[in-house]
Image 1 (spheres, rainbow, N blue to C red):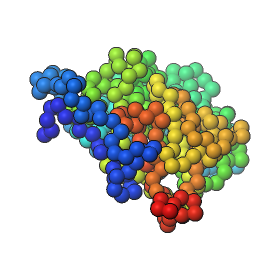
Image 2: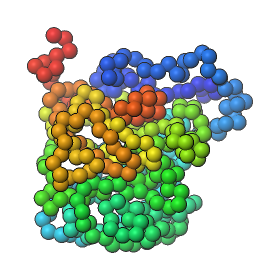
Image 3: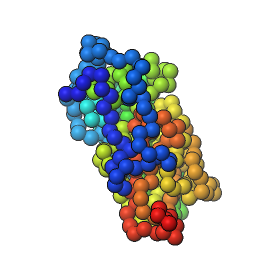
Image 4: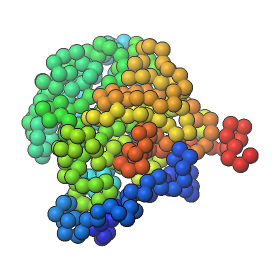
Amino acid sequence: MSEPTSTRRRPFLSALGAGGVATLAGCTGPLSSSDDTDDKPQETPTDMQDSLDNAAETDTDRIAADPRELPDPVDWDEPRHHEIEMTTTEETAEIEPGVTFDYMTFDGRIPGPMIRVRRGDTVRLTLTNDESNSMPHNVDFHAVYGPGGGADDTTVAPGESATIEFKAMYPGSFVYHCAVPNMDQHISSGMFGAILVEPEDGLPEVDRELYFGQHEIYTKAAAGKEGHHKFDFDAMKNEEPTYVCLNGEAYAFTGNGYGPVTVDKGERIRIFHSNGGPNLTSSWHGIGNVWETFYRDGDVVSDPDRFVETAPVVPGSVAIAEIDTPVPGPIKLVDHALSRVVNKGMLGVIQVEGEEEPDIFNPEP
């Protein structure tokens, strides 16, 4: 067991798939000395016992959704009817090793499953609140014309189900989320996802697609403190998160998490970045690349922006970016409010594999 005063964190600046010590925006090694500051107050073992319970037994060994798991592109040209079922769950899992938290989810993962339809399609959605849950839940689709985006009519108590039907009338990529009265807590705890309504002519073909979700977690203990972290409503009101996560966990898609997401050099990649929030705007940036084609706010019918370095993704929206991968190496997905990267967990890595291209980038000229 670690010492009570330790703040154990994943050594996220190393082993990011490129071998050796990685760099973040040109800086080598740790970007913060906050864990080693001698003059900050240190908690005693008694303080620690009073403020933090032991890590709880987990319901699942993973809360982060696999970014590679999303529906295939639309390949039909006439309206279809879709039967979709989702289950809300309350799960205890790790934010990072040794740190547990009580999450809320759609289908047991963060973000919730992507729903993919074509404009003009009809969706019949059944939402079930798992009988083991302790709270009511519902779902608000930003892609729905209707009261509360469907939230009013999908509010269900534990053990109950509700069904709605809606027509996908406007194209784009949109967030869905739980919208019970304490919706900010439910979203912060993981209850958000994305629905993509493709235009009638579809989206341009790419080689690979990835789906990520950013959100904040507010807890009563500092980031990295081992034990079970309870939700902190005051911190949420003050918009001072403990963690800012990609897919529900700190540094999940790095060499010290589940590993980077690997792609082949030369592939064109489309990335869906949903920001559940509930409060912070993401300054979405790819270190070592650029958003070559950028669909701002999930707008897939206007002319996209080109060669965008960093773009705001407000809470309750989904941005779409397409990137090229002409050279091998890590592409680091960050919120360029960089303290969220260094101290709060907001980092993921796409590892491009292939032969060097010294005419484009030469590390040893």
